[in-house]
Image 1 (spheres, rainbow, N blue to C red):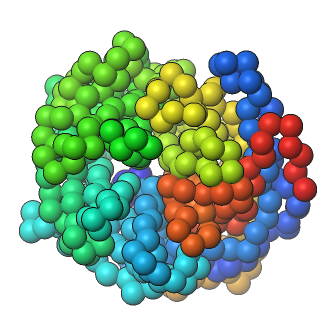
Image 2 (spheres, one colour; image 1 turned 180 degrees about the vertical axis):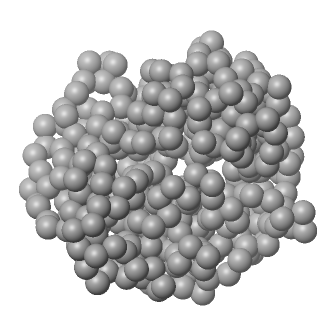
Length: 418
């Protein structure tokens, strides 16, 4: 998520704004029809090319970027106005009548102290009385002085707003790992430990907010997608009220407690070849009557993706109820959906004349290495009135890092794509 993390691929989001399209084909991927843990067949999805939707994002002049969206991007409605938060070390808010007509970009006021910190608002929830609740991913600096690169150990804080997120009251940190549990010898360019890259969702009974995020713990047994929860009634006084999922129950404190991952790491994240799921996004699908999670899958400690995955669950409060993640978009599909030019392996041939601001890519035929889109932060966002990143029907838009060139259609078991 981080500004430091994004440096390696900074050029590609800029190129996205040029609006050039790769050769289209009618369907990228269809979810394999698998059975759930109960033996019932699971839904499927189809991804198809669609006109570009670019979130307004954050302007980063020093990198010639106008649309940076470096995390999950929460949305909410207030009457006829749709609000969106994008982040790049600090949150910005835009608003408008729908997803394709957002503007009026303002820098969000996180408070005197928090405005000087690296924070990303990754998830929000609008209460019935109009109060907007949110949670942010915070990255402290200089966790490991002895390393040759800057490492962090993220933690999660809870915030509240009465003006649709233009300004926020900070109600304190609610989820963090033990500060002693760090690995300064990690091969990761970013994380020595910590918990972040998350989303939260209020259950239908309005009893609990459920958090699903990423644990970068030094111990492999605690790496991967974690779960935690907080009572809805504690939303205005959350300190010490979050409990993490561990060994089959909600029995570890949100602050410094242990986790049992919902989707554990396959290989130690802190090794060069680390492999795990991370960065989930969740919505309630009104067509399927199920919760849908889309998430990244890293195949090394730089968080290179082999594809985007999906999981389904009838009950957001049951961490064991998520179906085995299945790939819906492979790396080739990610590259085709997020880059311009011709991709050869992990290299991009940039067409002659392509430019963005003062950015001038190499002439046609010159290979630019390490300039490929990560595919990070997949999100499904509904495009109908009232729909957001938390609510979608049969068809919505599929985003990665704030950009969508794909439409996603959900299929009930046995239903074929049109």
